[in-house]
Amino acid sequence: GSNGLILTADGKDVLFNRNTDKNGANDVYIAGGNLNIGLFNDGKMTFSSGISGNEGYNIDVNGGGELNIDGVVDKAGNVSVANSTVNLGENGSLDSASLTLENSSLKLAKESAINAKDINWHDASIDIANGTIGTLNVTNYMVSGNSLFTLDVDTSVNLSDILNISGDVTGTTNLILNMLSSCTDRTGIIVAT
Image (cartoon, rainbow, N blue to C red; front, side, top):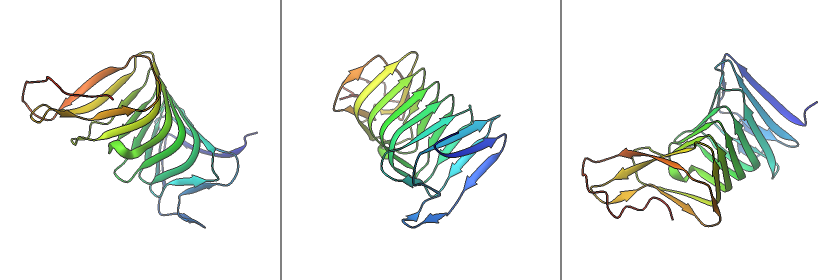
């Protein structure tokens, strides 16, 4: 058996919208155990009001489909995504101790949507290119395999999205630049600190 809640989207679109719990707007509240999300046969699941629970619950996402988060996910321990796509919308955010991506992609509508101490990814992609310049803050950054990081660059003002790492860095990341201007001078632009 499983310890926690299992939600599955098998070839269907599943929407959790405007649900509440004793703490307010949460589509799902994990009082004990973990949240396991299966996205099979192009299944999609959307949480518009967020996910919460007792401090430190884990979220496991797998199956190859798409998870859309337009609300706040808070108090999570490890969020692990395997072979799937996660989109954090305009109002979406993820607060977790760690985020692990394996053969998956993560798209952020705003750079500040992630609050994770550790980001671990293998053969995965993180896309913060949203047409505006911002900063993604993490403590520890560990990457392996053929991983891609997509960010905005505005050469007309010598600015780009920034990946701000305050702790340890391991591995190499390939960059994809979303050019916001046609100015060709690319000197002096910082993309990571």
